[in-house]
Length: 270
Image 1 (cartoon, rainbow, N blue to C red):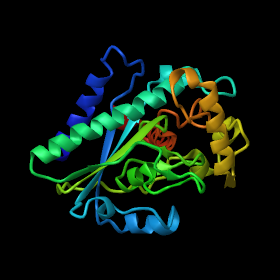
Image 2 (cartoon, rainbow, N blue to C red):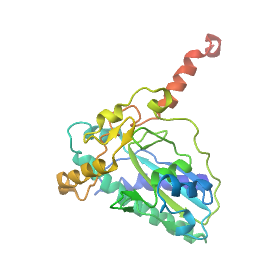
Image 3 (tube, rainbow, N blue to C red):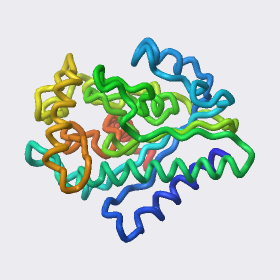
Image 4 (tube, helix red, strand yellow):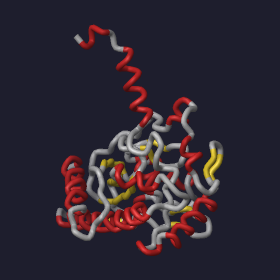
């Protein structure tokens, strides 16, 4: 079932971006699976928020949580590198991807229900406490538990296709084999102390090597709401995601691979 669900998600994204009204383009999504009773879900209550939900809060019969990362194409992310405010393409991409995740979740819900399973869909965003700016269901942390990657200094999940994209998650009563959590760092700074380019990319003084001010970050998101009003409600920024080594790849995996390749004796290539 794992391969079939992954293929269904990838096919949905491919077909969705062919619609005439859609301007955003995505690469193939990557998909991960986690057991709904994984103890890490309960641990999120103490790490992320005391009000963070566990899968069975939404679906008592939950067996599996599906997480998916939908990466933006480089042509779109490049538009957001310059200037202080987010580009219109970035804002439009945020809005269109959130809507696609909603429709993808509806599609998955219909699919699982048609096969006799229960299912529960969760919004891509705007499910947080507006005073504390803490979510009751962190898609990034859910994706980590589902094995999609590890966290960077910019607090984003770095997957095998980088961190420029959107994450969604879905709960079902279907029993699907889980994926292993990655124990390998994906952030160059956390791996060997180098890089830190995301901190330099932050345009509102919210991100530093040893701290993150979520309120200053949110302040910038609201400024972009005004700047991007012509494309819709885009409470987004993304400056610390673009134009850095982890934007579209896992740079640590690439670095390790390069080292191993260089260390191979000549005989290995003969």
